Image 1 (tube, rainbow, N blue to C red):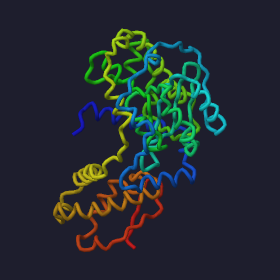
Image 2: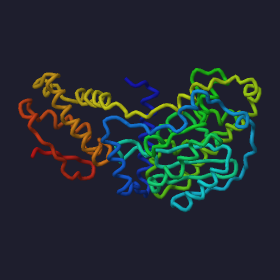
Image 3: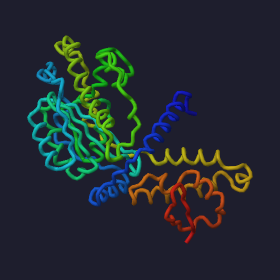
Image 4: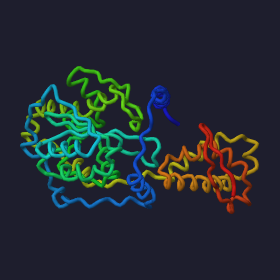
Length: 366
């Protein structure tokens, strides 16, 4: 049972999403080549991680002395919005000349079976970049692979999710990378590190605007406020890292940090989210919503088998269309359709989805 705090967060997220949906924006779809790659990814029985080119170096990796020294960061950095191969090439050449950069990702969690990286924000000491990774999906590997494994360039991330997403979406591994959230937690003796917003507020006495925290980053064109929000994530992450190096210079001098977490992050392989857990959660919801007089017609075991067949069909269809399962068949429709099927007939049914009207889904037997 979700806690009251979790329930309130969920309601707040729905309110914010509803407000964004009223904007005159469209969901940007991937081109055919990128979509074929996503379908192939969806249909894998298990994720196949790309090989790590620096595998032998990771067990002995530590942060170099040069990368622990503070650097000057321009206060008024220019911003380049990268939505074409030419600008992507310009960004790559700039990154190759740097000693460090902060990287942050925003995700589109609708209209793809798995979440997809919708924006990549990168900040160096002199420039900010926002990469439209939906438009440039097929170019990201060639652009970022070398700099992400370059041992002379330090990459700063916050948490582990972004590193896993680069591996899942673009087959990019990372080397010489630090998780600032972990560094901050170690330095302050915290068992659970705070979010970036809390650290920014403590370091710079600035409260971040969280309006776009639950924004659908597949929307285009992106509002200027949303772009500013995205830019701030990587820009302030780099600022926090520089502030941290000055504040904890003595810890760097004494080699007081444990780098186990960061080595593990470089070695970690992405794994698909467990479908079985999703099925159990979806079934429990549907069973609770099912009227008692329908429950009397089924044993729980038989009913669960019928439901699982329909759930499996929905998952497989969603993978082939690279679509969220809920857009193929809503879980409440699962429950409504499920109670109409007799145990004797469900095994021979072939299900087909009719073209859905807005806000509805219909299925029939063929």
